Length: 74
Image 1 (cartoon, rainbow, N blue to C red):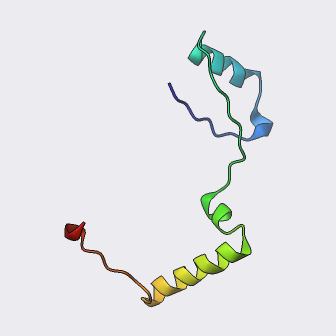
Image 2 (image 1 turned 120 degrees about the horizontal axis):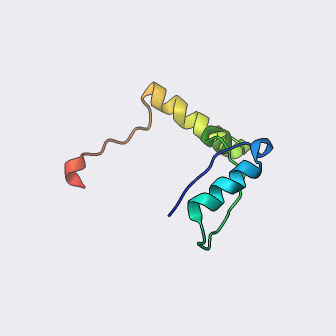
């Protein structure tokens, strides 16, 4: 079984632990904790990446540097 919880660390409490125990009962489980970034925030987090992405957005809006693909050719 696989379950993903998204929550703020300030909201973590005894109830969370109880619900995990109830859901997985006597099974062995793995718990992985990671910071959750908004995808856009993450993609814009480096100056170099931000410049490239903003340039690509501008190109699309202006109809420049677009590539056409015929799905039948794939």
